[in-house]
Image (cartoon, rainbow, N blue to C red; front, side, top):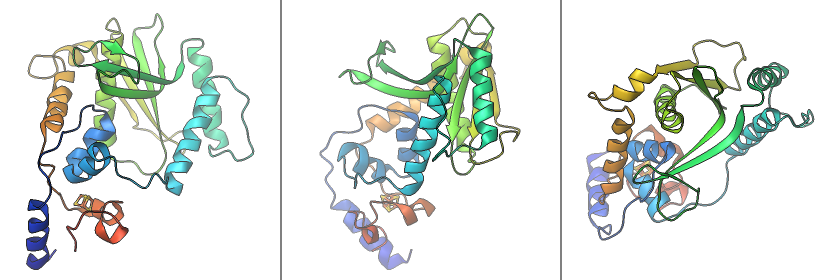
Length: 253
Ligand code: SF4
């Protein structure tokens, strides 16, 4: 961006209102968006702007998730319009059989500020998380299945860590929490997608305190933000709030 554009972007930013509330509840995706560009998080989660339209990639991802959930729930596969490969369908059927009857699909969990479990839309909810698949039985490990379409990103391991922390809060007797990230557009046999944490790592993994405290500190920083600065980067190209895309952000004007 030229200095000229930077100047006007800065002036435009100064003209934006500062007297507003912040983000009142967090999730991994909210935090990731805020860390990438606080201003885009402000538009989406404070001002609740957005076209409401779902991109083809998002629609495909939603359909793939629904297909995975149906398999975990033992519903007959709809081969017509299926997004999953035969290999993935077989893999998920095998996971259901392996954990039956303990594998739960699309489990939504929500907590209040005192970290007490709440219903998804309760007014005092400050954290939400949805597990694509989660299982725990009398085995020592708890397993989480996270389904992804599209590319592999390093940040997915961060999401896995948060999900492991939350799962361990739900089931503290688990000795291990395993998060298996399943990239549905890659072969089901693709390795290096399984991350695991011991109970000790989860209990004292952040300066001698529970690892989830690291995430709560990040979330508190996000929820305390009232400035929401613009942060230009490669994500601007596809940002729905960019001026050239019909949005309010003038950083590239
Ligand atoms: S265009 Fe870039 S700087 Fe502006 S809101 Fe989007 S991501 Fe942030």
